[in-house]
Image (cartoon, rainbow, N blue to C red; front, top):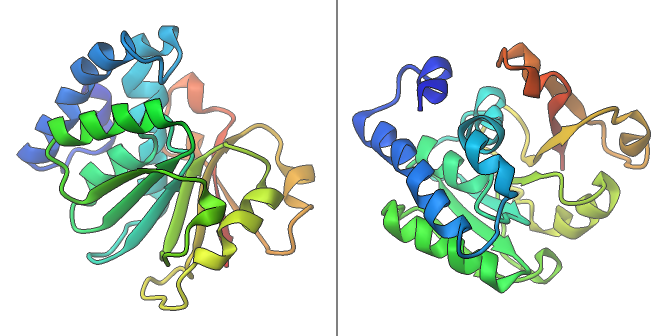
Length: 206
């Protein structure tokens, strides 16, 4: 929790409480259903929660924003972002039912009324969203193909609607495969821990 306070010192008491509860909840549920790697439970706040909040350093979501988290797995980046932006609406999807069941349990325990979790493939979704968030579920070209149809034409942020994608490593070749001009934000600009040295947020306007 100290890590979250370090980089987000202006959290409300409610937000701090919810972030504080996440450690115990994930320890409990991950022992029953493996939604994140066993060794990562010890670094949950750095490698999952703070990593997810890297998107919040790049983009603030206004009240009424609709967001889709594709391939949410154990609820990342959607759950930390939903705590950070309680007036935005989050739809967390994954094709694996047992992961979505764990996500739903954690959402219920945290009393997150702005989160909907669903077992469904992104390609089948018909709803519209201002932003799609995700954490390295596949290469960017097929990902853009899955979600382009779901990006709302109603843009009310300074930044155009699109994808905010957590990725690592050298992305030049991968991003050359898409037509859209991506912007890359180095998470090492925001967070000092070694883990973030190669981590990035990729923004693709759609």
